[in-house]
Image (cartoon, rainbow, N blue to C red; front, side, top):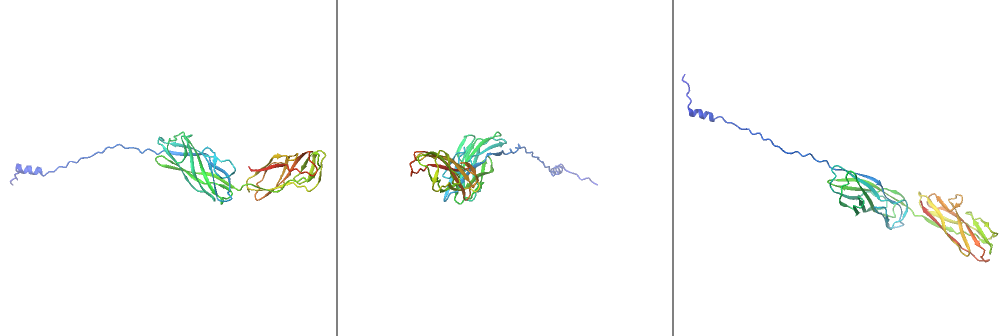
Length: 322
C-alpha cells in the first residue's frame, strides 16, 4: 500500500495544532501582625464614700456634701457618724502607656434621697483635682494611682430613718471603657428634741444662812452642809422628756452652772428612763418617741439672802447622739 506522504507544510501544520498552556503559580507574602492584648484595669476600694447620718428635714429638701478630702458643706444637719470621702486605688495590667479618662455615673437611690451628684475627684494626689470627668490622666500602671472621690446628696422630708446605700459607677476609659459599680453610705434619722416639763424647786429654805442644799431626782431636799433647812413649800425635781432616734444611743451632760442672788448650783444628777440617779454624764438608750429624764442638783447659798427674797440659779442640760 502506498504510504501516505506528509509534506513539510503538513508537518508544520500538524505541529502547530499542539497548544501549550503555561501555568503560573502566584505566591503571595505578607507580614502577620499579632493583635495586642487590651490593657486590664482594676479598682480597689480603700474607704467607702460616707455621708454619716443626717437629720430628716421637717419639710422641703436639704443638701449635704463631702469633698475629696473628707470636708463637709451644705444646709443639712449631721446628727452622728463620721463623713468620709471615697478612696480607691486604680491599677493597670498590660502595656499601660495610654492616657485615661475618669467619669462617674449616678445609680440607684433610696426613699427621699433625690440624688447624689456634683461629683468631685482628686487623682494621683492632686494630679487632677475638681469637678469630674477628668481626661488626659496619666495611666496608673502596675503600681497604681490613688483616686479620691466626693459628692453632694440632696434629700427631702420623705426620707426614712435608717441606712441607705446608693450606687454609682466609676467609668475608666482608655481604648475601651471599664465600669466599676460602687456603693456609698448615707443614713437618715430624726433630730433630738428636749421638752422641759418642770424646773427644779427647793421650796423655801432658811434665810441669811450659808448652807448647801441638795434636791434628789425624786424631789427630796436635804442639807449637805451648814445649819439651814428646807422650811416649807412644794419641792420638785427637774423633769425633761427627750425624743429622737429609735436606734442611736445618746449622751446626757450638764454644765454652764450660773449663780444668782448668791446661790451657786453644782453637781447635777440624772435619772434617765427610771434608772438610779448618777452624776449627769450619762450614756443612755435611744429615746425614741419620748423618754423621761429627772434632775437633781446641789445649791450653795452664801448667807446674804434676805427673808422673802428668791434666787434662780441655772445650769444647761445637753443631749447629743453618740
